[in-house]
Length: 152
Image: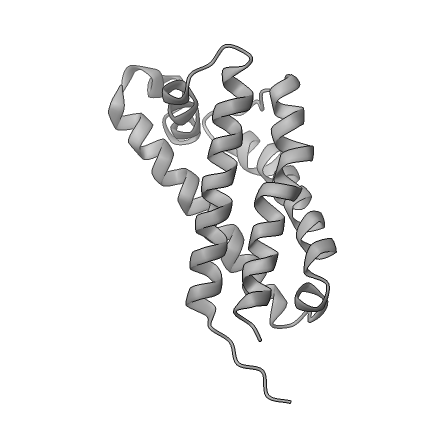
């Protein structure tokens, strides 16, 4: 049986959905603990600019939004390319996507953030809801389902 693949579509739709769902959950979760969408976007840009991000206004918010989607598209691309070798990622997309979403969260919080200008991840109730709970459902699962959809 011949399998066709549409890598651009898989990565585009998986990354777009994961990016939208992830930023939406961040807006909701972190707003409940006193932040604003504007500050959340600036915090994302803080990975590049550090504390200076809050002084940069809309520039850092726009860069934060851009970074959000670069990360989401990168996560989708990593999953897609891994699925070329690990067929389980396509054959069992729900389980694989949930696990992958958790791995993305752990990688971001324990590798990327400590190496960024932020250095210290922020842990509060919103982090636990959007991270270990939200990432599997809203980041990993959409990516896995899109990769499966465009890999058959």
